[in-house]
Length: 253
Ligand SMILES: C=C(O[C@@H]1C=C(C(=O)O)C=C[C@H]1O)C(=O)O
Image (cartoon, helix red, strand yellow):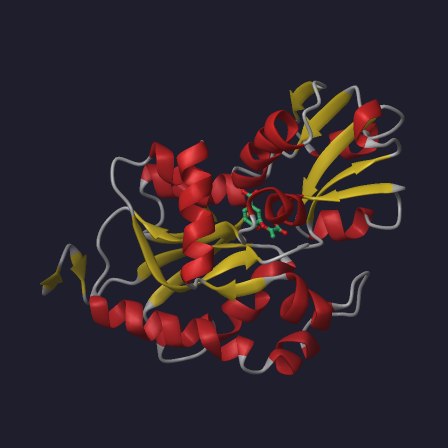
């Protein structure tokens, strides 16, 4: 068996990816050959992917960047991420009352990055002092009412957008506070991946972004304008500004 920096060339690399709509442009290329033959795709919510990377159940994952603080060593692979340079639309605090009147904020149990960002904004940007509750399951979304607000991420956040009078977009709030873009998730591994694999993987990530109409055509029409979501709200390239935003966030944790 040929070993290449800890990875056997015959074994498939286990790749964890978030099972929300936000990853569909990146997922598109990973489902096509040649890369699809070299990887096993595992889809789950961000918090569970983070646990899988920590326990070694996946080799690389599009995981919440906040969990890198808990890894003995880590590598950020390639040039794509789940990021935003302004409002992202799908990571928001939803409320029936304005910020200053919020008494309780529920935090999404599926998140690891946004929950940390939310705690930071509460203290340093909004300067409010609500009771903070880590939600345990989906039922917390129904508890968001009156003076109880809630952080919701992903597709479920897109579904809440018409239900609440007040929407505080966390990527937009981060931008207003720091002037920087925000990176929610990146391709993190705990071991160094083979260079040729990373190059091929990166090319595959770009495939769907180059043909968004094809990606969108595969998804049943829903509650949100996906063209806007993929080309305006989300920003997938892990460029220098995003790396600066990422470094700043990790330094604050
Ligand atoms: C933009 C988003 O970013 C997400 C937020 C994450 C987190 O808070 O840990 C992790 C991955 C992303 O899915 C979203 O969920 O809509």
